[in-house]
Amino acid sequence: MTTTDTRTSDAARALFTASFGAEPVGTWSSPGRVNLIGEHTDYNDGFVLPFAIQHRTHVALAPREDGRVRVVSTFDERTVEASLAELHALFPERRDEIPEWARYPLGVAWALLEASATHPESVTGVDLAFASDVPVGAGLSSSAAIEGATAVALAETWGLDLDRVALAQIGRRAENEAVGAPTGIMDQMASLLGRADSAIFLDCRTLDANVINLGFAAAGLELVVIDTGVKHSHATGGYGERRAACERGAAALGVPALRDVSLDDLPRLAELVDEVTFRRVRHVVTENQRVLDTVQTLREQGPTAIGDLLVASHASMRDDFEISVPELDTAVEAALSAGAVGARMTGGGFGGAAIALVAHDKVQAVTDAATAAFAASGFAAPTIFTVAPSAGAARD
Ligand code: ADP
Ligand code: MG
Image 1 (cartoon, protein in one colour):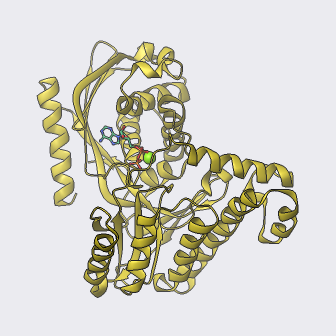
Image 2 (image 1 turned 60 degrees about the horizontal axis):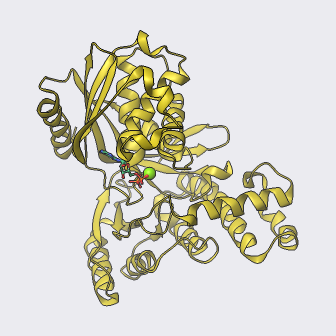
Image 3 (image 1 turned 135 degrees about the vertical axis):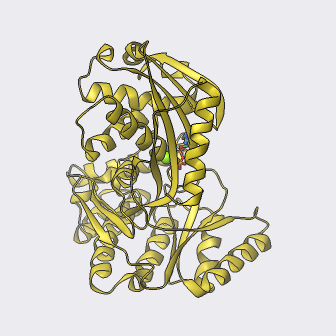
């Protein structure tokens, strides 16, 4: 573990002791993620290329005898508790009775029991204390980090024989049904399967996952995150509306998902749907191709050659999918003008962060340019930091 990571792990232990008056048996953790390319392709059965980052959510755990589960987080120090036996009655119907953040870990507990057909009385109760250094709502998937940490901690404690892909599906089910956020599976797969210096090339239809060497450090490159501070929310209409447009496009072409649409099909689609739906579909279809091109470029030419694909991805999200905001466009333009190899918004859009691939000796110039551009536009100062492709979920 790195120093920051040790601190966050210690914070989880300290919160555990303060909240539950005992020592945990161990800590587990799972990372946030950055999506290098492939945005809004996941729920269209397409391709994505995320990597796990060094920011992690840690959970300290100890079993308890009475079949209850208690959760506490540094985000909200009130303990939330339920009995394992009542989780199936709480989710999804009565989820509103539980504070929103606690639906993530309790939802994972519920989905784990369901997926493994485990009777709640056959496993031990647990106390869980969470601490995290993953920025929340910045498009870095603090949600997948808390789900992943909970999933690996409980699966080991309960002796459940579930592989990483199964744990990712459990995290997604918790997020979809226990929290009520209609997200895809990319975040959980990245958080659970991440590897140092590597991205996960994921086929969201088959869940085939391939580790792709990124080689950023060897090429003298850094991945800079420019967090605009603009909070996105899956609850607002934009996300659902984009999904609906994608479904309309697939239905018009008579295919199960936009994954099945190629660039050659686009002229025909233009005749079948309205102009807005057409542009939404064009984003997904071209973005899928860009993921494939990025993987090929990384393999054949290395990371310095992927800049144009990142820039094209941003333009497509800004103009066709219309999920960018002025702060994200400003961040991307400032980074490129200061010499970034490539830059794009990352995550679901409507706020969150941009990423820029930058030569080591230009990181300061990119940071200064983005800071200055935000000030000149009257935006709140962005938070800027670098991320390194890192390992996925593990016991600490
Ligand atoms: P993102 O995943 O982009 O950070 P989401 O809205 O998907 O944003 O998930 C953020 C939510 O996840 C938080 O509002 C909170 O409910 C929950 N969450 C994430 N990390 C923690 C944590 N360490 N402790 C408690 N809740 C957390
Ligand atoms: Mg999330």
